[in-house]
Length: 275
Image 1 (cartoon, helix red, strand yellow):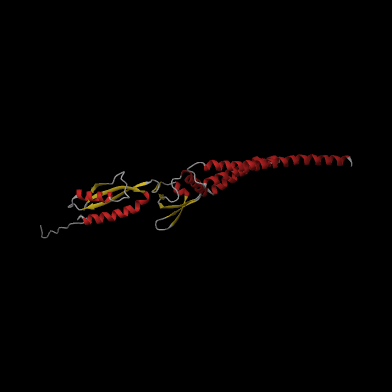
Image 2 (cartoon, rainbow, N blue to C red; image 1 turned 120 degrees about the vertical axis):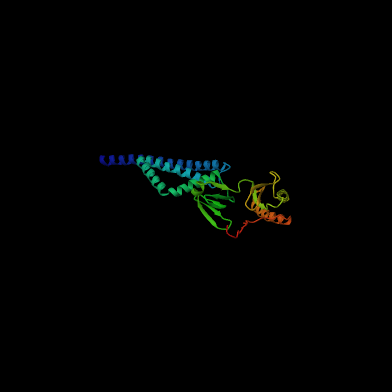
């Protein structure tokens, strides 16, 4: 073998050694990065699931985000191992991320709102809520939309951003609710007797709580009636049925005791003859 061939062979061996070291270094970075990403994912998932108010849906999503973010940096480190200029790659990633973010602005806002709804939990599945003019029972809380069911059986799919950006009234969150019912009696009736009858009616219903105790008080001297407000507290699941029953039973009790519930009336006087 001549001198020229020996030099060429030496160069090939030297290049192979250098690239072999780069390849081994890249493989080592990949293996360590993959192990670290998996460890970080498990640690993140475990930490999030320990938070009592966080929904179980949030944990896997956040853990996967941490894992893939670490893997992205690992890939950049592998490219740098082979001498690739990573500054331009990071710039491309940044520009691509910005473009995707602008294109998916509405979708990303729904995802962010969904995460906030799952973390802060202003409502849970089964709660009856009113938010942004949308009323219904929560059927499912997703990352993009929240599914509701109306009392009429209609299904509503509401974007999370519309719910998170509005005032949320949760009718099911508190364990007790107050029932208010306005009942009118005639001006000719005994108002004290009517109030006593309504108070006895509420006290006889086992669904009405003793503390706070039921109350009856006059709230208005209307055009055709003296209006009483019947007020009591019940457990939240009993609210609607108690209100319906109280409305019916108040009418029946007042009829039985001889009290009248007046309807709007107007007296007309006809004056005949010229002045």
